[in-house]
Image (tube, rainbow, N blue to C red):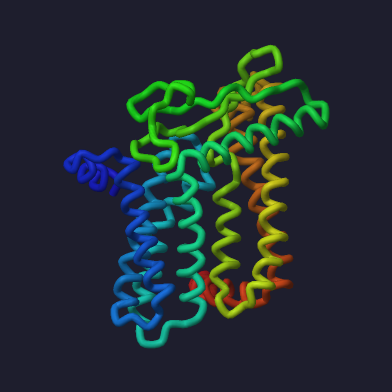
Length: 318
């Protein structure tokens, strides 16, 4: 699937990441149309196409996660396209009587993707998230006495290869008008004496993805008052930010302290891969599960919608 999509991108003279963003942008726009115009004549058809395109958008990330050996995200992104197709069929099959849970799921995806698109596409916001992530990690490392670290000057990973200091980048600071390399804007971490540490902070390190999942899930509860939705956001967003800071602190310290550690003899899973792709991922998912339980008490409508979404899957397993 990736070969087909990227071949089309090449024939159009587009970078792979640009083509992927276009696919995701069209998909989320169609879902937004379906969510905010529930009585439109072709809402089910538009939404069905949107589900497939959004599924394809996330599916195309699976190759990257295979390369960096992140099994959790490989599984999640690989399942995105078949899941999108399944929901598209569901959308068409209930076009005359769409359940509230499906409308909520649509809004959840829309209001999860839109904030990410905005942050990614506005370099100043992108850089602000990256730098604040690196700075908060540096401050906590110093505060808890795990060593003297500092954030090096921000750099940008160029699409054609290599990287340069952000001060030398001539791109537009308000609208991202050119494709970036895999890391995008990044901040290297180093010790206080300038010795490099094999850790860089990119947008994905900011936990923005986790935050916007909760933003989307809560904002999409259109039947719930904004007062209750704001309470849910106040509980979830700061909590995710704080937990992510300590996650990053642990990854930096363990990676820098146990440089030669491997999971077992001959393994290519070093300390960074183990903490980043396995341990931290498991702990983060568990923390999000506990947070969801708290939110279910505050917003029982959220719990009801999730149960209705996963009910067909549970029946299949049984």
